[in-house]
Image 1 (cartoon, helix red, strand yellow):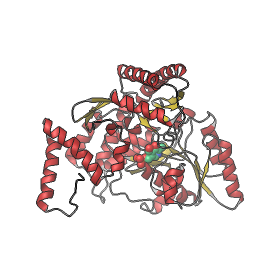
Image 2 (cartoon, protein in one colour):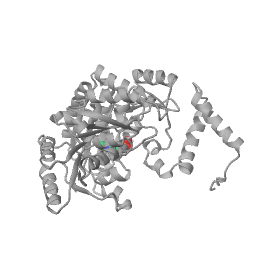
Image 3 (tube, protein in one colour):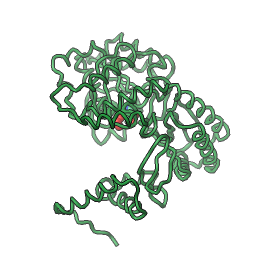
Length: 458
Ligand SMILES: Cc1ncc(COP(=O)(O)O)c(C=O)c1O
């Protein structure tokens, strides 16, 4: 029988009762069995009725006949309401480089929370200045000024706006299969028709070219200039994440740097996913010693605890900002003290615990073992590639990867697909994952692939 939900506005008392019940869950140290069951069934109902039912269909946690609802996390695992533990090899698509609730990050955030959480908007808030200074310390070359925001797509919006503001030019060269977020500017830069089509026309002035092909970038710039247009910048992920973990040729980024210098446009590196150590160096561009004009950071930037992102630029592009600091944006929550505390502690931990090196060593280990697995199942697993702990497993057909991901979830391992390339399953575990956990994951992957059998074309 179809359940009928009363959608009329509720009384104040009903709202208070609901809020009180939820706060009871949040604030209790342990849940009763009835509470655990209620949270699971409420969550499924709430997503269906008040969030989006379709999200449930995309969640691995509801792809089995029971529903797994996440409730707590630490290190390389999260636990559901029932206490079952899952190894996180998806890593929040890059967020959990330091693992879940790294104690040093939590400590800093808690300490700041006891002092003040959000800024006055009008007085000078010290942590925003300190974090920006720290970012200038750790980013390549003479990157200097930070604009702090709340998420990756917002950081890219700021990069796009700054490039136009600073150069007075219009066009951007962006990449096929690139992903920069889903707000209108970042989506215009992204390279997948499926997500762009419903919103066309997007922001004008984005010319897409194949990823990894520096000649194509130069040709696009030349053609635009020859037809009277102007080019403000080239937007690039040093390694494409959502596009399917695509690693460019070694001369690609150095050549893009040279092309941008030659045509006087800005090189914008989107390090939202590759930044902070994930690929085995602090930033993706460090693999090729390239200094971009603008870099964007997000995901792991908040230490895996706080949502914060940044757009960092060289001083020479900052002039218009000195004329009017609010021309670019005036984010209410951007760079708030709580998030800055998380980011500062995150950076300290990444440097202090040598996280990029850890990501490199564990990534090399995983990649080597995965390549061995691939050699035994080459008809199913057609490629394995990655740098550090950004690893992609490419399957012969879409459904093979998804079936394996589902199987792995049954073995209490979470892995991710990529938004722009459905044949690729991504492995992005925290750098603090243990070798024992890695070996368990690899073992389950091999067993899972063996069970997939030979691919059948659909
Ligand atoms: C390279 C890159 N840029 C931007 C974004 C968008 O970040 P957010 O989801 O925080 O807006 C992502 C997200 O996956 C990303 O991978």
